[in-house]
Length: 250
Image (cartoon, rainbow, N blue to C red; front, side, top):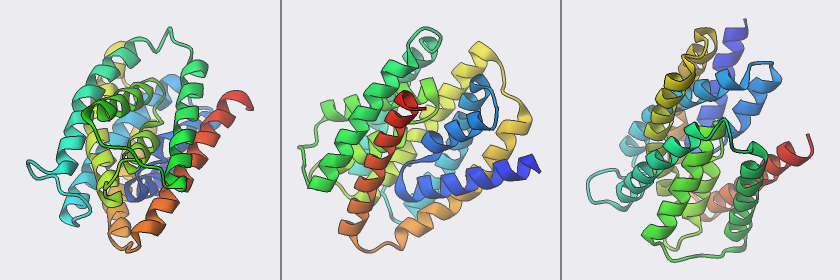
């Protein structure tokens, strides 16, 4: 019965994540910890399951034309830039996972996500540059490797602060970049700590794959770009406040 709950939880969260670009790891990680799963098992299980869901979602985003990952497109360029810089951040994040203070890192991440959410809702915009993409990729991948969450709000939300960035393209690029970064981080975790228990990560992988298939379909049906941007801005702001709450209140 517990396996069924894990499948359903992963399916719902990956559906939301692949439709809106965020919430899988940030919500599911603390939920699993509340269910008394050890953190050292939760993080790699989140990573491998979201990698599978992300690969499925990326394929669906491309097929449904939410994003265009053909060679030379903006969606592909941004995603590939984040992947390469993110892999470097993953190496640092995993190997520092035993020494860095999660409280300090998560406070910084929470504040950054909150600021991005406020900027989106206020209609603020920035010029898109490689330096800003490098920064988003590094910080988000570092936190993903360290805690299992925090990637989507930074990457999807951060892209929406840039001028003329497509909302659907930002979400699709986030899934495209997140999948290989999660997979790489998972292998690093396994190398250092061994495989997490199969009864935990296998149901999560199954649920995530199903959610990643159907989530992009929901995104493709959304027509109002302005409403979508406002919804995403609200969710980014909500996640930032949620991260700060977990660190300082609970």
